[in-house]
Length: 306
Length: 310
Image (cartoon, rainbow over all chains, first blue to last red; front, side):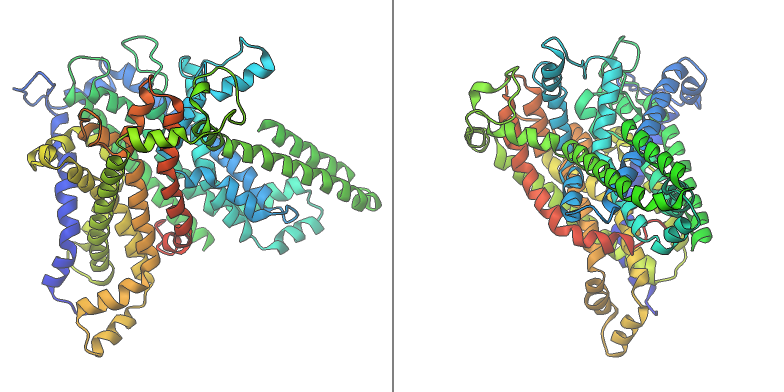
């Protein structure tokens, strides 16, 4: 189509201007900060080269950095595995043609997705309350008045708690994706497998699952990326805590929460802007690599299954 | 969860043991099918309880009277249901100010984000120009960068633009719009790509200007993608906490906050009874759930046809 250069430029202008000023400037500034020794109380800062990166990756702060990163990876692996299992089981249950009132069940199971997450997360925080929270109150009915799980004060249970909340928030998405993919599998294939003597278990592993792969792979990778940079759903419940010792990150201090707490300076009086910036750039590189990996895998899968 | 997997495995194992004896198989399949159906229902009921658990308790708590707030006894049903908590929320909290602030931020960011991304997406979809590939790559790279990482820079930037003191809500709206532009642009561009360019060419032959072809032909056809993108921007802003928490400083009564910050304050304050928090959170959830349920129809076509997957 013939359009003048000026017109193309005008169409692009609002978006490009926004991206350059609001999206790019902060990134470039963060990159710049990461090469300096800027802190809250150090106004006359200067270039220090790669010193911040060195400190984080191999130097004095590498222990803390790797701990936060490892904790985040553990959280991603646990959460996404559970998304897959719960999503798969709910989708299989809903896909059973003999289940009555399909629409009702689906509607109920989608509720976590339809409610604003920040609100439900704050509600979960109350459910976890040691003295007054309904979860512990129910446990006390069964196990006596002394029972109760220290959800928000014990590192292990805090981790379990934020996993439960994330599963609650995210399984509907997996359920919908898997249900859609299940319904697109031709019934003849499963019948053929059954005629050939395959058990339901075998036909699930050998027929259904391979056919779900094109839908599952991108969903899993994208969800891993989202979980890796999860902030609100965890921060609103634990603020990254519980903290067991002052110089260590808390038990649910995943990367984003760690950065946030460092900026708001929960622990130290002096905010290490330059170090945080270097941390942010390293995360950016990891996330960028994962995003491109996801696209590359998605593209490869499309060729295979197109 | 493990129990169900184990049970299914057991069911599957027992079927495979019986497959050798044909005559028995049919009868067994009936019984086993019944067991399997019962297990399926049991699982669905467990999941439904899990899904509804927080919602149920917040509704219950919002209706509970003041006398059983912070009680250590479990009440499945409120002892004396009352609307006191709702009355309190509407009269004693800066509820309307929070709602107005949130609507302002979400509305502005949706408008700004949508206009900027639909015009940009149109140019990227229809025109071929130098720098097009570069722009597309830039968008992809930017998508991998969570804005939260550059929080410090955002703060300075908005201070530099003189927005921090004069109009922090506008600053917040701009940040939300910018962080959503990348996704909506990809989504809308993907949808534009599926609309035949011949339709616009026909309009041009009939004497329409390029702007009219865009405004009157392409945009109406892309409505599902536009609606889906707009909704995602709106819903995203409605729940955003991290950036708002840094950019907005609460005044005396907290009336300059968005509602999620207000709600967070309400909950962190131990003097505030849980019932007030519960009522307030329901008041703010209902409109969004209504929008979501209404808009579900757009999500199906508006997000899949656009092919965000690439």
